[in-house]
Length: 259
Image (cartoon, rainbow, N blue to C red; front, top):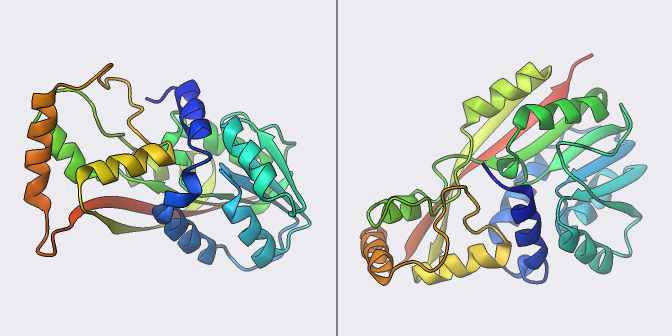
């Protein structure tokens, strides 16, 4: 379970550094954009738009009549307004579980790496279904439970606290989507990022605003002995080129609202 206030604050604080380190996010978002079904979309919602990077690409590729960017973090919306001021887009700070939109207002919802931060998937899918027109599309990417398994396993050797964010499995997401009345297609892949040191991975997660936000995380400073145990175990994953892998379980979903 994630605290919405913690998520909002974390990503707001990361708004100034996010674009410099968002390599995985751009790779997955680009893949997701390539999966958007061909068609004419009158109103497109970028749900969890962050700094607005994909708003510009959605505008260029789809040429919608109206483009909306929505994010829970005020800092991200502020950054989008500053850096994407040339876009003919509307921006809104709001919650994916409570969309401030009329029924049937959107023909496409695009959401890159947002749903893994949502506690109530059923509520998200119900809201998406409500604001989509009949036959509208909800395309999104997310992360699975095997994400950062190297870091997770290494911390498990050190102590009993939760140090790595825990995400829903594909089957859980599919069930929630189908219960909301969506026709569901999905794809998955493993993406491996490489780092010289564990501290480089930790710094990237912090700059993204994606540090540990689970309930059960340790409060305060971590003991030096626990850190050393974690680092020692993570070394067992170092490859022949001297690189430490960080594996992400990437999900891509195409949901269609049926009449």
